[in-house]
Length: 210
Ligand SMILES: C[S@@+](CC[C@H](N)C(=O)[O-])C[C@H]1O[C@@H](n2cnc3c(N)ncnc32)[C@H](O)[C@@H]1O
Image (cartoon, rainbow, N blue to C red; front, top):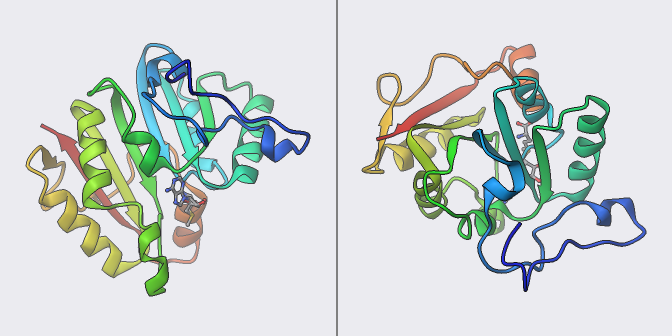
C-alpha cells in the first residue's frame, strides 16, 4: 500500500477499528497497489457510500474512497462485500493528508467530492476539504483530460469552490464557467438524492485537467 517500513493497518476487537486505515502511516501511497490497474477514481468523504457503490457497479471503474469516520468506512465496506463489488476499496483517513502522499502524478481519471459542507461555524473552517492546496494535489493526481467533480447544496460554498477551480491554471471547465447542468457519472450520493427529492438546488462544478 504505502512505504512498507512505516505503514500498517490498525486492528482491534472493535469492528470500526478493524477497517483499513491510513491513520498512523507515513510515506508514499500508491493507488495502483491499492486498486490494481485500470480506470482509477477517487471519492473523498463518501459518507454512506451510495455514490461510490453505485459508481462501482460500472465494471470499467476501480474506485478508492477515503472517509474520516470509521463507522462509515465499516458500513460501506460491509455493503460493498454484500454487493460483491471487488473494484471498490474504502479506507479511513483524512483525505487531505493522504492525497498529498499519493503517487504517481496522473494516476486518477476522476476525483469526486460530494457535499463536503457546510462548515457554518468559524471554528470548523479548518475542516474544509475543497481548498487551494487540496485542489493542487487533485490536479497533480489527475490524468490529462481527467475530471474533478464537486457538488454542494450550499450556494456560497459553490461560489467559493468554483473560484478555486477556475483559478487553477491546469483546469478547464467542461461547460461554460464550470457549473455543470447535470451529474453524468451514473451514480448519486445520499445528500444529492435528498436535495433532489426535496426540490432543493444542487450546484455541480465540473472541470477537466488540461
Ligand atoms: C456532508 S457529508 C456528505 C457525504 C456524501 N459525500 C454525500 O454526498 O452524501 C461529508 C462527508 O465527508 C467526510 N469528510 C469530511 N472531511 C473529510 C476528510 N478530510 N477526508 C475524508 N472524509 C472527510 C465526513 O466524515 C462526511 O462523511
